[in-house]
Image 1 (cartoon, rainbow, N blue to C red):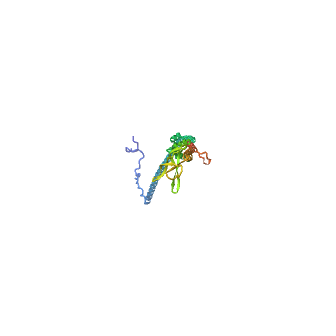
Image 2 (spheres, rainbow, N blue to C red; image 1 turned 180 degrees about the vertical axis):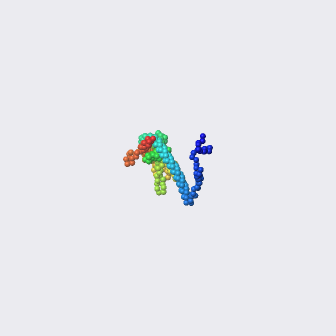
Image 3 (spheres, rainbow, N blue to C red; image 1 turned 90 degrees about the vertical axis):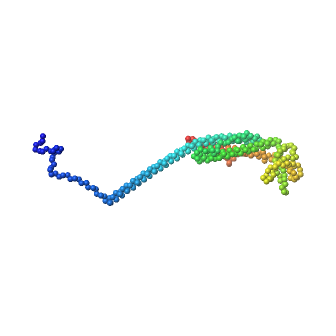
Length: 338
């Protein structure tokens, strides 16, 4: 029911305090655009923008530089790690190589000791006028098994300097020893027949040489010549026999067989060729005895090379066998680093 004394508001309007009929109306809000920036402000903005861009470019360059340095550092560390690993691998191979070389050196020393023992026995045989025929055969089969090929793939460059020098000296000495051994074998083989013949002839001497004479202007010269067929010294000598002389030809001196009459009297240099037999004992020192002396000297030289020279304190040497033992011991110490 409507209240008394008032007018009901129109539909849709909430009842309340009525607005005064003459109240002022709200003014519309006018949006004023911002002032246009001045030229100075625009310059500052542009300059600030360029500085920002420059800083951005610098930052980008620094980032690239840092990335490059990081990559290089990574590569460097990789190389260092790789080099360290490579050194470690070489060290391991050097230790393994030292163990293998020790084994090779000891095997070579065993063969050298065998050679030294056989040389001693052969020299003893010669002193008793018995030719060491078996030793001559065995010498060809004996070879000290150590040379430069034993050093291959052993990383010897990683060995201590002193051990390296020992190893190289030992290698060279063993190679020289094998050459000397072969020379001795050839000498023994060539001398056997002559030496055995001379020993046999000591009981039954024979005349192996004669002297013939010739004139050269107003001079008379003698030549020592071998008899083609030596004859017994203690029996009748032949009146004529054949000797071998050296004659000059366009190709040089060549041996030539000549028949000679054994001189008995008269002009020895006149007429036909005459020969005078030579006492066997007077030439023994220049033939078989000299050969035996050379053989024994060669054996002694090889033995001193192997076992050293202890007879002369002023020139004493350790010997190759001792050097090999010392080297093998040093290599063994290195091999224990495994």
